[in-house]
Image (cartoon, rainbow, N blue to C red; front, side):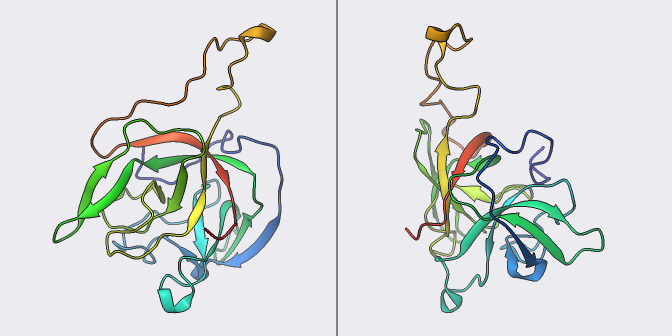
Length: 195
């Protein structure tokens, strides 16, 4: 499942806001050859990853990249429509890695009890699955700062709503994750505020 970028009709966890902008695919990462491993999934219409825009090197502005979620990809390739609005909520696979260490670097510590509002980063590390662009680590495996993508957030069906006759009696956050590398589908509240 995580060999492919997030897809499906439920990728938007909110109906807005939307600030739609077009980008040249060559300016987006981590995608395909523009990822740490060079084997990340490739963009196609119907896939909705969160990506960083602009340079991957510190000299090119990393980690202060604008980030956004892919909305559509032109049929001939090359142009990508993205939503770059802060406060849009989207479903994504997020890796629970917090830090990398060793030689070669590998995931070392893992979040086991994620909470609402925890920062999520665009992470171009080799060890993440082909369809995963986000982690909880502020640094990639090479020690470079990762661009802030947003924050862990409630999905539309996760709010406690028993008092209004809803299905949720309690708040499902914090969640419980394994003490090993896992990829979990969660909602991310996007931001373009510089950390």
